[in-house]
Length: 241
Image (cartoon, rainbow, N blue to C red):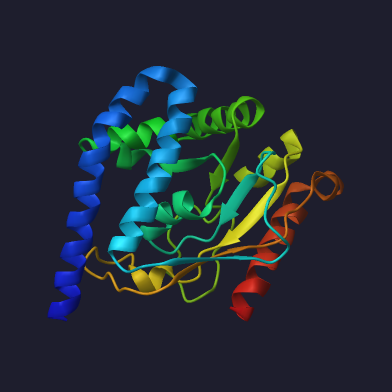
């Protein structure tokens, strides 16, 4: 127990030190609009590589149907088990993807500056905020790059492999005809349990890319069918893993 606590403190300190080293660049890039946000995304990706290496948490990436096409946009969806999932987004996704994120975390001093810069913020209990975030996500898909959504909306704290999915990602797919790319992070809860920041545990974290749901398939399914199609593919893969 003591070793895990000390290891967790080491993980937190290395995270904070790296963040402070990168912070001046993030602040400067904030003045350059979307181009600056794209560069910030790449810097966070480097940060993720370095931090996960330093804390002995290597990432192994698996592709079930070949690597995604980095030249096109996707609506990326993933399961949600841990705070570590955020680091996995930037470490595992090989193309620029703007995540939908909880607005509350933007209030964290210093970190909130970066958080607001590279995410689309939403207050899930506020209808106007949800409508605004969906509009921003659609605009980002049209003009800038891919988006990333946890369709469960919160940490899965149940015994079930996946919780209920919200409609948002799938409504956006229907309206924009952008392919959906499901990804699984099956190990993050083992590496960092959502219940405590002092539960870090070293080891491999996998990112598993499932076959994309094409625009053609999206066109013939309604929102409920599309949501079930994606959820079933993720459930089947989780059972195999």
